[in-house]
Length: 166
Image 1 (spheres, rainbow, N blue to C red):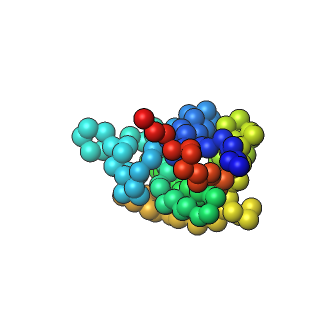
Image 2 (image 1 turned 90 degrees about the horizontal axis):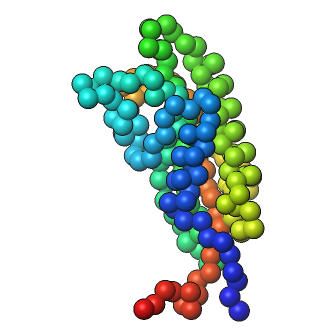
Image 3 (image 1 turned 180 degrees about the vertical axis):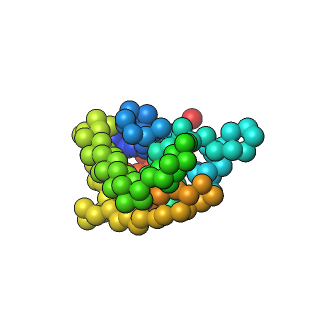
């Protein structure tokens, strides 16, 4: 007997992250890609940085794992701000870390209550933990923030009868 579940695709997950970033008051930019693209993605045509894009939320793919009846999407979530604002006034590293930690907490809450997950067999982060590491003076524009590991686990039905056929 097949178990019917509401599957959440990779594209839906990226969209959930992007909608969160667009709706969050403190986030000015969202991106998805490799680590090196964090800074490159927000440069202006002349190669200078567009400081209005900070703070930002960036999602790095960290793999997908299939096990018997489950699929884990793994992501690294970067939430960061620039150490100096556009007028050159220094911002305090600890204040930025504190703010970005709160943004990530908001993301976890947003995912947990997101209607896409209602009625599905999706669990957020294995064992109730999501580990993060703070960083300072990272990349070429002195970013300060956090990188978190986030795993989204869902039940899947590995059933040949579910394969779309023509």
